[in-house]
Image (cartoon, rainbow, N blue to C red; front, side, top):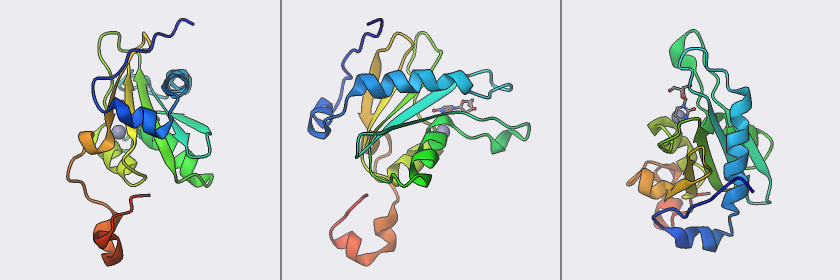
Length: 159
Ligand SMILES: O=c1ccn([C@H]2C[C@H](O)[C@@H](CO)O2)c(=O)[nH]1
Ligand SMILES: [Zn+2]
């Protein structure tokens, strides 16, 4: 395989615990760049996620001439999965064409990922390597549904 997957530096136990096949989800996120609509930034971004029942959904960034209406790849992928009935996510990957650096999700996407759990986020490079951080590491002390529901504050449940 031309994909070489290096191990991320943190929380690798999470990958083992959740039984995530990082190669598949990272490969899908790279593939998802194919349909990126990014005439303004010219930065093709792809994302893919793994659902609890083992399905992979992917998405790309979709930009708009009214710049702030542009949607990131991660939220495209998440909205595809959720709108098809998949709310339990196990992992998400993000990819671009940048050679020398991984692509981290923006703050808005971190908050949207957070809605669906403290999952591993694989930030990939074109050579197939990645840095993995959990959502909690990317967005500590975050806002979520449990703050709106007393019973969940007493025993937090994030999915
Ligand atoms: O994690 C990221 C970072 C950026 N972008 C997109 C949004 C925009 O289309 C372009 C430039 O910011 O990159 C994503 O899709 N995901
Ligand atoms: Zn984003």
